[in-house]
Every structure is written in C-alpha cells, then in structure tokens.
Image (cartoon, rainbow over all chains, first blue to last red):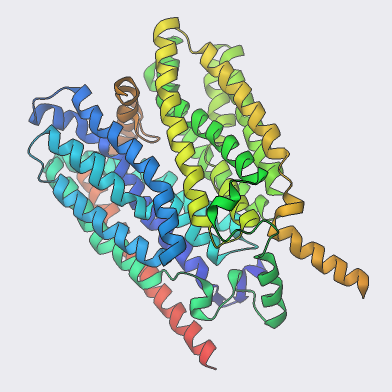
Length: 433
Length: 69
C-alpha cells in the first residue's frame, strides 16, 4: 500500500478524482434508478398506462446505449473535464424540465431523449476513461473504487427518492436532483477533475521520477496502440473483449430484471427473492473491490475469464439446484461476479489499445453491452411467457458465459498489453546488462 | 420493445419494488421515520461534498507548490 502514496502524507492527486467521481456516479446512478419510484405517481397524475410510461424508458435505454461511443469520441477529442461538466450541467437542466412535464409525451421526450442523451456525459464510459488516464499500475483498484459508487447509489438514493416523494411529491423530488447536480456534481467536477496527470505536471499513479516516467511512457505505448479507433476493429483483442462483454450485458440484464420474477415462478416469495437480490448487490460491492485489487497484480484476462466462469456456475445453480438453494447460491456466486467485469474490460481496453482512442473504444464496447443486454431481457421475457420456465434461458446464458470465459482467457495480454511490454523491455534490458 | 421495458423499467438498476419496501422497512426501524433518513443522508451528502472539494483543492495547491519547487 505504501507505493500508493507519493509521500506518506501526500496522497496522489488521482485518488481525489477517483473519490470525487465515485461520489458523482453515486448521485447520478441513484437519480437514474429512481425512475421506478415515480412510475406509480405518473400513472395517477397523467391518467396513463404503465405501457405508455415504459416507452420513455425504452427510448432512454436505446439513446443511452447509442450515445456511449459518441461521448467516448468526444472525450478523446476534447478531454474528459469539459465533457463531464457539460454532461452534469445539461443533465441537471434535463431534470429541471422533467419536474415541469405536463403529460406522458413530454416524459418520453425529456427522459427518453434529453436526460438519457445528456447523462451520457457523466456515464460509466466517461468516468472510467477519465480514471484510465490517471492510473496505470493501480488502474484496476481505482476503477473498482469508482464503480462501487454506482453500486451504492441505487441502494441509498432510491429509498431516499422514495421517502422524499412521499413527503414533498415527485416534482419537488426531481427538483432535489437538480440541486444535487448543481450543488454537488458540478462543483466536484469543476474543482477536482483534470484531463490527465500531465496537466498538473504529474505522472500516472503518482510514482514519478525521471526513470519511472520513462517506464510509464513505455507502458502507455502498447504494440496495438491506435491513433484512429477504426484500426482497433482490425485486431482480435477488440472483438474478443467486445463479444465477451455482450455476454456480460446479456447475463447481468437478464438477472437484474428476471431474478425476482424467476423466484416467484419457482414458488419462492417475492420478499425472499428481493432479499436475495439485496444480498447479491451487497456481495457485489465487496468482491468488486477485491477483484480490482487483484487485477493490478495478476493478468486481467485470467480474472475476467474466471469472473465469467463463476457467473456461469451461478446460472447453472439456478437450473440444477432446488429453487431455494439456487436462489441463495446465485446471490453469493452471482453477486461475486456482478460488476467485476466492468473494471477488468475497461482496464484491458486501455492496456491494449493505449489511451489515445480509449474513450471511443470503451464507448463501443459499452454500447454493445447495453444493446445486447436490452435485447436479451426482451428475449428472456418472451421465452418465459411461451414456455412458462426460465430453464432454457438460463442454460443459454451458461453456454454464452462459458464461451465468454474461454474467449477472455484467449486474449494475448502478455503480448499486447502495455503492462507487460514494460516488464518485457526491462527484462530484456536487464539481460543485456 | 414494450415487453422489454414493461419488465425493465419497474426494475431499473439493482432496485426492485419489493427490495425497495424491504430496505425502507429496515431504514424505518433504524431512523424512526423517512424524514429523519432524508435529513441524515442530505447532511452526509453535503459534508462529503465539502470534504472532497476542500481536500482535493488543498492537494492541488500542494501539487502546484511541489511542482514550482
């Protein structure tokens, strides 16, 4: 741990950005996930149906997924600070408009188009790429700390919104979000976020004298480093990571939507199903930090493949174990692999393709993750409606996850990652000496 | 697309309505009422925001000083 710090009393500035952005992500994810809290209110006030409101969510999911590569490209061009400020300001403005909508058509426009598009500026894509530029050796743990903010946001801010809606109504609760963006997110980004360590005269991880600066500069020039993002499409690792990430999106989306529903279909009470989902979310947060810490010490492809493998075992348990056993086994096993693939995939993308186009490439993989996940939720629902069971869906996911495991393990990280290029160069140099 | 969102938006993210009621019942036991939870969390958010900004700015000033030395 000592090397995390430049001096014992002087924490590397990048960690302030990590904690600041983790807090911004906590607020942003909490605000977005509060959508579900307002549905009943909208249904009553606008005298509309659940299906009509769902159109807004549907448009929002597609817009957010498609916006990810666009924002990635914007960060690569303009830097993340301005994009984060732009995203937080316009998202706050979007929530202000949301607090004034007169009917469900405006809901579809404001939520589905404006908020979903502008919130892309402070999305997981943008914050992870920001952190990727600040860290090299500790990239895994830094991204895990950042993403733990997202995990906490849903658990704390959704009940917060729910209470606030009971007390002051949904419109003023949404105005509360405007205040959170204006008084919390924007000041944090404005005061803390810088595009790169170089802008403060620092080096990634804060470990910096002249020699280590050279080391880091070597680490940031991996063999597959691209100047144009399209070049990455002609290389195998991009497709390996993206395909595995689509399976990740499929498996997590299916569980986030259908887990409690599966429990009910198997005769388990919805309360117990929801409780197990709560355990899953709790395990997720702790294991996320552990995986981040480990990923800075071992090959990330091995961890990524293992995460998919463990998740496959979790899904298999849902099919072969008695329902009550399957429910809790999955909560532990599945929870341990839930968000862990995100820091690993984002870190590997930066390790292999360098930092010049990492925004666009991360955006593309996140887009595939979101769209694959959205489609799979629909397919899983349709299969359940026709077959009356989730067994075939879960078995399909097991097969997909096993394939993703082998695909991840087959990534030639030692050959292409900047981390190992440095070690290789140093070893070669040492041998020559 | 409707069947997708019909399932999805009720459960957007890791919170579903049953889990939300369960979390609320625990928070009610702990804080006594929702209002107390709202006030406590608002205060915590304010303190953390001020703390992060204050410490971050101080760290940046120190970085600038180290750099100028």
